Amino acid sequence: MRKQVAIITGASGGIGSTRLVLRENIDEIWAIARNREKLDALKKDFGDKIIAISQDLGDADAMRSLADMLRTENPVVAYLINNAGVWLDHTSGDILSGHQDYDAIFEQFNVNAVGAIRVIEALVQPLLKGFDKLVANISSEAGSIDGNSKPDQLGYCMSKAAMNMMSCCVLYAIRPKGGMVLNFHPGWMQSVIGGPAGPDGPFVELPRVEDVKFYVTPAQSAEGIMKVLDEPERFSGKNPGFVNYRGDRMQY
Ligand SMILES: NC(=O)c1ccc[n+]([C@@H]2O[C@H](COP(=O)([O-])OP(=O)(O)OC[C@H]3O[C@@H](n4cnc5c(N)ncnc54)[C@H](OP(=O)(O)O)[C@@H]3O)[C@@H](O)[C@H]2O)c1
Image 1 (cartoon, rainbow, N blue to C red):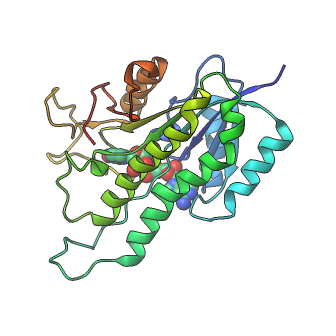
Image 2 (cartoon, protein in one colour):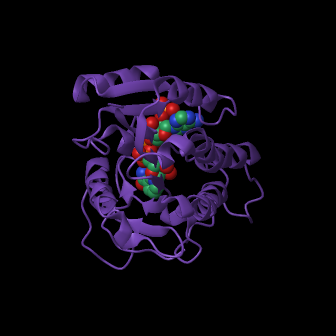
């Protein structure tokens, strides 16, 4: 029988290194990120189900080896979690600041949006032969035109808005074949991107409020996202569902 694999990018840290994709029925988790050592360390925590794939999603050629691996091993791809991301707007400021960091803008676009396309392209055919046929893109409230208030994070916000549109284009292409795409805001998490502490100091879980900028641990976020992925149909509609880790729908 062909093995079932789930693929997750950004698996070397933050939300990607939690138990996010460890479902019982999955034989292997193909964990993608650049840092080989951190990926190998996942095996200590999660066992031999982890297959470490050290690749830079910003590199246009990098996903060819994933495509080769898929051809050789011919697994059933159950689902993909496109989670890798970078936040590089450290010094840019808003448009009035006069010093946009264009390298940072391009790199965020390249990894957060284009990198996710590279992964999907490499595995879309085997994915559509699987059971779930599900792509989960870890986007951000930063990509929501309705909900955004980050004028000093042009590059990051643009990259996540691009990811949201990419989700739409991919959904329209794969839905006729049974495919599904969801976009997530994972909450404001303690991680390299989210930082070690919330706006008010050390970690506190904020009460449920209308505002989506909660401060959570990666594990809490992962747990919420997996609950949504257990019943993705509930969130699918004309457009890819845009959902936060608590299962609340978000506006594009
Ligand atoms: N943290 C938050 O508050 C927050 C809020 C909203 C949305 N998000 C989104 O949630 C996702 C996960 O964030 P996180 O906070 O868990 O981030 P994190 O701790 O910084 O982890 C990011 C992951 O992405 C990988 N990555 C970065 N650049 C890569 C590249 N070029 N090629 C391959 N892998 C790459 C990193 O691994 P290597 O360095 O080993 O490559 C790492 O595993 C991201 O897409 C982020 O934008 C986070």
